[in-house]
Image 1: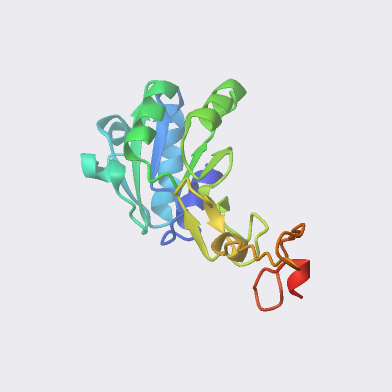
Image 2: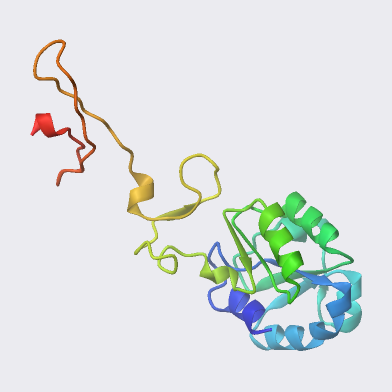
Length: 193
């Protein structure tokens, strides 16, 4: 319960705030307490029919809710019958930013880590953990859900590129280059200094 509360309420307007919680049907008994805590913190719940039977104050979820990045104190809740159904929902609606599974079943956790295609995938942790500062990058400059170059939280090194400069001593000589960052940010070989 605390992980879900943190993931939504701690800072709801940021990209690593949870937007949808999928609840396995065997865990429905946990929903009323989770919902009570979230609602007490000002969260509006958008829920499917099974959740609304337990939490009548929730508004009916629409197809659009599953794909919405609210960036506010809104959260969608949906019941799933299996891990397969949850993974299919994530493949269909995820922003590929951060996904987290809360489970005591480590086989399901490992499958989740392997099969979910997001920049950050977590087990028993708040999505709010996806942050450059938390990952040890210092100040976070941004986050990428791309698969080329950097993926996930990015600090300054992920936003820079390498340039090789090679200068020979004379035509036909053996070349030796080394990548070095100068104080100006320019990369030079030993011969160019």
